[in-house]
Image 1 (spheres, rainbow, N blue to C red):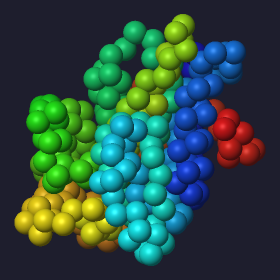
Image 2 (image 1 turned 60 degrees about the vertical axis):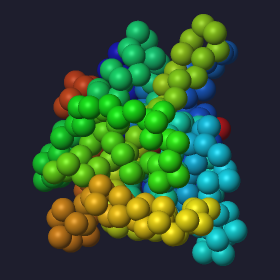
Image 3 (image 1 turned 180 degrees about the vertical axis):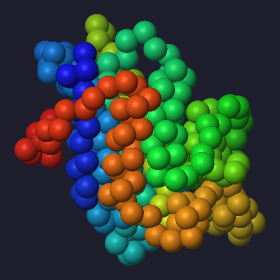
Image 4 (image 1 turned 180 degrees about the horizontal axis):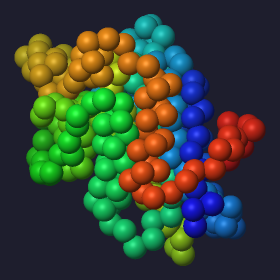
Amino acid sequence: MIAAWRFVDTRWDTGARNMAYDEGLARSFLGEAHATGRPTPRLFRWRPWAVSLGYNQDAADLDAARCAREGIDVVRRPTGGRAILHAQELTYSVTLPAGRKTILQVYNDIGRALVCGLNLFGVDVALQRSQPDFRSAYRHPSSIPCFTSSARYEIEWRGKKLVGSAQRRFSDGEHEAILQHGSILCGPAHRRLADLLSISDPAVLDQLRRDLAEKTVDLSEILAHEADLDALGECIRKGFEREWGVVFSTDQPQDQHAHV
């Protein structure tokens, strides 16, 4: 029902609290709490910067000691995918009951809403339509970062990846919930991830740096000026409303971590 939808912008927080918040939202559709869950797109940011590892990713991929020296948090996402440096970006999450939709259908639905929002922001983007062979790609160390390849229904600008996403389904055996995360790149700082990985082979590192430079793009590069994150967030909200035909409630959570 339209009245059940909510859109929130919780702004800045640590990696651990951001990830716990989203997992709490997803689990509010399960078990005894399942009737309390509300479908919720959320926007947020990271302070301090953080590297997130995918749910099943090997922590040894990351040089945790260097991250600590540079004041960069390390957190494990409840969703899949590969490593991301969350720095100059606006991050989104969407939590909702799975219903009968497949993983790719949900990616497509969310992707179309994000495309609409980015178009409203003045950026002409497109959904990736092909699906790479990730099982083969993940065997190579240069695949450790999420942004070195685009999956189907991720968002590109002129063939370069602008938004990376990852999804996970939670189940209690009776009910199923979806949590999808994604990073909208707003500046070039995500490329520093190459310096935070535990890769000793200079050739692999050089290839990784080239991939991040050549295969990704950020809004500051597209716009030739710094992106206004508040204005971007408002456009994303409108994109979801227009594409999904919903009207979000305007209530914000009294306690950002009330669902945790």
